Image (cartoon, rainbow, N blue to C red):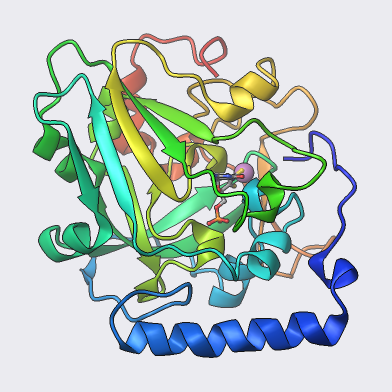
Length: 315
Ligand SMILES: Nc1nc2c(c(=O)[nH]1)N[C@H]1C(S)=C(S)[C@@H](COP(=O)(O)O)O[C@H]1N2
Ligand SMILES: [Mo]
């Protein structure tokens, strides 16, 4: 989000260029070996998934764009930072702690998730609050499948999520300038979390998630602005109170808890009526300009969740 752009020092500036490049090459080779040994790696491995029951007509954004134009402030605030500076991040081994108002709190590891929960492809339209959009062939599973395992109590009304804190592997968490409070946190109402469109993604384009897209597990809620899609999740907590969310804490008049895509409610500093589709370079200013749809085109499925709510107030 262009709230402000702090000064950044690229790793390529503080490390001699060839040392930096050869280190990257070494990591790539080492990780490829690890992937073959089945111990996981920072790099994509093939991931099996059932064909998509959910897809859109829009042409998927190229894998190149999906994996190099990212927001992941733990790796820097620039769009190319996550792809460039996430090479040292280790998404395995990985566990997710699920607790709070549940009958069966648990800590589950990624291997168990991938083995026991069926994965499927979901080709979703994604809309960033910064008014750009993509179409991404995710692989994942409904969040409800994980929630069912822990048996939420009747008193639970919300789900809170947390991203990992690893300053040694995430340069955006260790620099002199810290753009956000860590951990990155997000939340959903329980009925939103249980909606069949809400998934936890483990891959994209037929492979495990690249680090820059939120490896090994991230939230995807296609009718909400991108910042709700919290990456590299380590903790999920059921609660009866609306959980704090990172961008709302940062600027509450700009980013609300709900963050439903809504062309009729502008951001205080820019319009949300249209969007730039990344990679579709046929617009005058280097990108197709499309009209943004209510609930990002998923209104038939999700508008009912907000019946009777004033969406200007609950933005
Ligand atoms: N932990 C964490 N999750 C995050 C972010 C972040 O900075 N940190 N950025 C969000 C924003 S603003 C967007 S648009 C999406 C981008 O996801 P993508 O890079 O996979 O397209 O991730 C979201 N999840
Ligand atoms: Mo975003």
